[in-house]
Length: 118
Image (cartoon, rainbow, N blue to C red; front, side, top):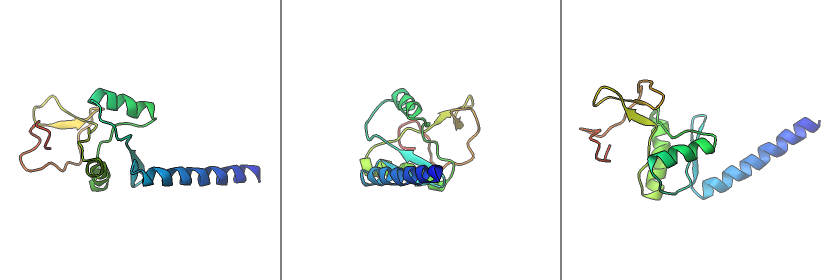
């Protein structure tokens, strides 16, 4: 039927576009989430806005797989990555941007120190 044909065409087109983005190393997946970058350096607020305009949100790892997806971009582009995490009202404690408590962390020893080595 027409709807099935249109759906198949869309799935094919999406798969082709995802393939191109993978070749350019600008997307990766973890679970049911897609992580993407434009490869440009920007400040935190610009990054937050760019993610929102793209229909997503700034990455905030919730498990080892998502952490690895973010690290993929850090290694590929030899740069840092902003995370959707902020310090809570309690110094030394962190939370997601929406205020919920972190359920996963993978800090280096004696981190976070606020010196960009977390």
